Length: 206
Image (cartoon, rainbow, N blue to C red; front, side, top):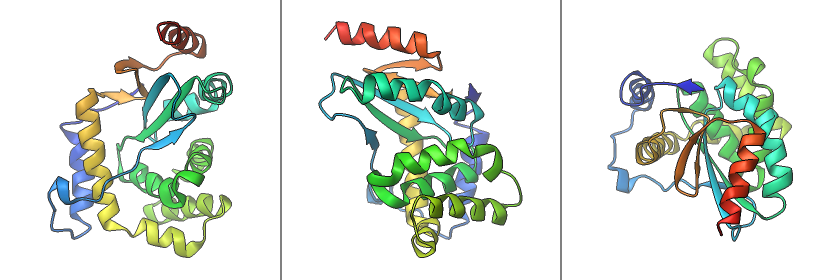
């Protein structure tokens, strides 16, 4: 599991990023609301919230393995409503989230899958190269250069995402990624077998 001290070095680096955007620092209530990215039947009996970082190798592995089985057996079958919430360890994770969100709900999970799949490649190089790598992924998913530039240069959205991340991780007690809030209870990363057994238990209790 990818861990950090959310109240120390992790948030300091992200705070420095948003300060560098030249914003005056509006109150949280004034920041544009951030939309949860949701997959599955809105009326599914069980809700799973994943907290993950696009730069976390354990998260990439989860999406390459366990998530695919969860999607097939629980999300696509209407048993689970799945929410993916980004966690920011660094500015590159924030940039990746901004690219993933650029196409809205319709494209989000497709772009996210490409970002996780290509993680070892796009995270290499200097900042300008990493930004170009993310633009390439966005173009692969059908987004235009103009769309991607607008999303990556949206300073207000960046600050809103950081504030949203801060509020959610504190509220749910997140200390590493991937972490999961399942029906209000916090769990760490687990195998598909353990995940399925837990979901079956939650479903049986409904």
